[in-house]
Image (cartoon, rainbow, N blue to C red; front, side):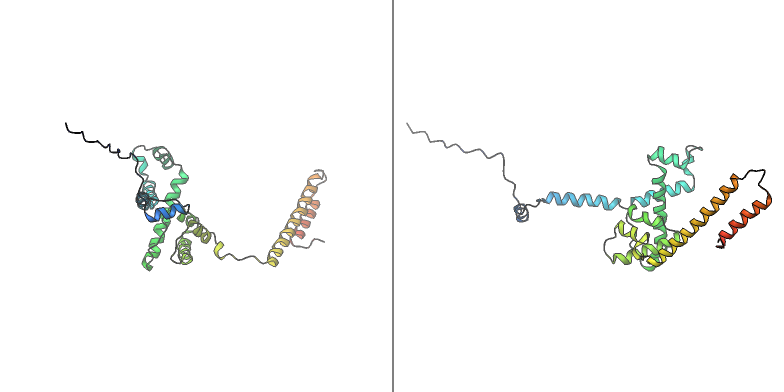
Length: 233
């Protein structure tokens, strides 16, 4: 009778296997930095593609709303429907937002019409960038955007940069103290005149109507005239 072979039990494969990390991930982890995987990087690329494809959506919305408003197309379904009510009931946003989108579209269109022939290809990419420009007169918007491009120098354009140029703070000069003092002095002098005139009028109101004759009225008017001409003694 042969001796039975000794059966050696093989260990089951571990249910958990350590994740294989790249050298960069191991180095980042050792330095206390978040370790991003290849999946994370792919996810970032995907989301940025979504953002990039929709970043100019405000122009499409603005153009569509501009056409509807310009031709009163909202009345196709209801002759009594106003544009403002249409925006609120159909799309759920107020008139301020709708008009802001329209203004943004019209502004960018104006910039492209004015600057594209000169070789400019960079224009506001989102509503935040174009919003400060819409507060300017139409003929100033192109100048302001040209100033923004010059200030950016080929770098990133931030909404705050556009706001700075549009508000004029980029080239704003400090008013000399002497000029400000002169303005304040003139304002105080005008205020003093008005106060004196007010006292004369109040005094006239207190005169008994029976005693208020033409001579007294003329006297009051002459005093007021002297005050306005800086002849008050």
